[in-house]
Each structure stands twice: as C-alpha cells, then as structure tokens.
Amino acid sequence: MPGQRKLGRATDQRKAILKNLTTALFVSGRIETTEARAKEVKNIAEKLITLAIKEADNFTSKQVKVSAAKVDSKGKKLTDTKTSKNGKKYFVVEREQKTDMVSVDNASRLHARRLIMNWVYRPTTADGKNINITDKLFDEIAPKYKDKKGGYTRIYKLGPRRGDAAEMVILELV
Image (cartoon, rainbow, N blue to C red; front, side, top):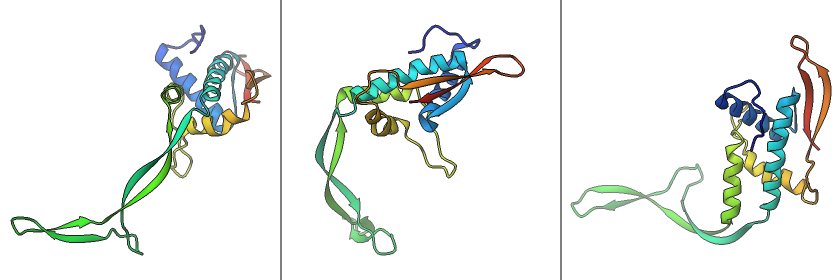
C-alpha cells in the first residue's frame, strides 16, 4: 500500500514507522509528524478506511450452541465425581448448553480485516487492556464516513522543526 517514499530508512524500519503512525492515527484521531511521513500515512489510512467502509455490513448472524461450565455463587466451577472402569474416582466439570446469536464475517470481510491487521499494531491502554483497531475501524470510523467518497484525513502545516528544519504537520481524521 505505501507509495514511493523511502523516508531515509531500510524497508523493515520504514514499515514499522508507517504501522506505528497508522495505529496512532486510528487510536487518537490525530498525529504530529513530518510532512513526508504524513503523506505516506494518509495514503495507507485512506485505503484502510475505504476497505472498512466497503465491507462494513458484509456479515451474517447465526445461532450457535455454546457450552459453558456451570459456576456457583462464588465463581467456582461445579464438579461431579465419576468412577472409571478400573475403580478410580475423578472429577468432571458440569456444563450447560446455551444458544447464542453471533455475527460471522463473510469471506471478503474476513480478508479485509486481515489486510487491515497487516497495517496496524495491537496497542494497549494504560491499564493493560488491548485496543482492537480493526473493530474500531469497522464499528466506529467506517460508519462515520459511510456517505463520503474519500478525503477522510486532513493535513495542517505547522512549520519547520527546530534542529533539522523538517516540515512538521498535523495529520487528523476529518
């Protein structure tokens, strides 16, 4: 997905920078970086958002049987004692069968999710919980831009950076 810019880095470093910046853009909604990096991240982010918009409603819901362990009021699993053929006793966890409705991705949506996962990391919050960027893209960001055809990001120029005079910009989701 990235264009022609080398960004003065080896391929693995360049991909890591672009993945980090893309992830940061989707997590916080805006990032401050150099103009060249922002233009590359803009291309990637717009393509990922377009992919999420196209596949946003491409899933089916179906009923599945779920087996779960029964628990008591303290949260411990309920067990039953059984005897084997040779006379040894062992414990078996009691289970209950439930029917749940789950949404199942169609093949093209699953492929889109995997393509998106190639371009974002799985960040964690301060308390250690994982943030699922792919779900955020499909559930929050894509519906916001459903009626829009491109132009999901905006670049503001900030001026040169002190030290190396690199042109700094803010890249944000519109």
